[in-house]
Image (cartoon, rainbow over all chains, first blue to last red; front, side, top):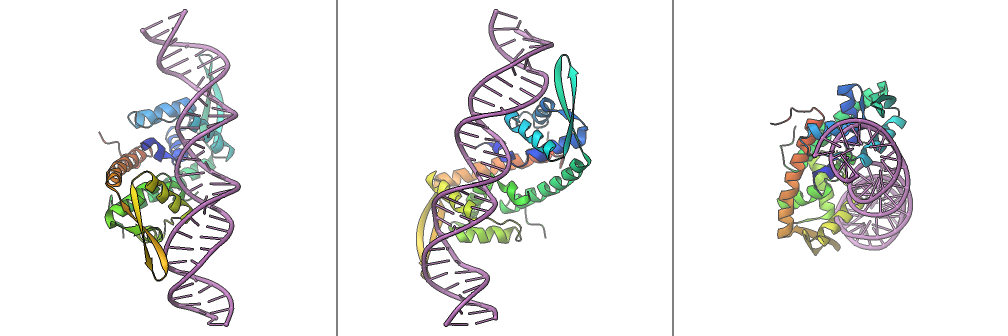
Length: 112
Length: 112
DNA sequence: ATTATATACCTAAATAAATTAGGTATTATT
DNA sequence: AATAATACCTAATTTATTTAGGTATATAAT
């Protein structure tokens, strides 16, 4: 399997969180940022990224605008206000998830 | 979505780890243990559990034996030696995964 | 007595999210 | 001239799950 496969289900949260920290990013930039932040260990494939971005946009959490740089089109994404709320919810969910996982795997004692 | 959906990809690790701590368990017992350990928050559905157990057995990580208690058949699972190795690998992978996720979501600073 | 809940196993169809493996096109490097 | 990097995309396949059943016995509640 490998560690990458476990990010399943966390991809949306990662994208939303990056956009909270950066205000606007384009797809390719997101793949590079994830690679950089994870020290080259997490490789976000485009086949996963672009459908995820399109879904987040369709759900109203992201909005887009394009910009041309060096004759190449960049499609920028930024959070909508609904997206901002969604980030907070997803982060809480993820923290709870990590906590449960650590308890279930005896990686830390259960919090009372 | 909900937190449960994020356990995707961690189910095998959870099962293997429980069997390392308990030496032998049957399916229904596993669902109850997960429920108990997570304070009722993680509900392992049988449609996920049984196929996962069968796969782990097919992969040689688990072995089974049956026992009849009160006219009901229980199918017990225990780790094989290969399964023991697999637990250790999966736990390391999961710790790395949690670490990366926390870094990517700014839940903790990157470790140097 | 009957019904519902708990115990105990299982599978098949549908869904969701990813991987794999393409495709297009421009710019920069070797 | 060829390759790698930048930049977007999609379609087929795979994998893991949810949903929704099914079977059967034991126990608790009405």
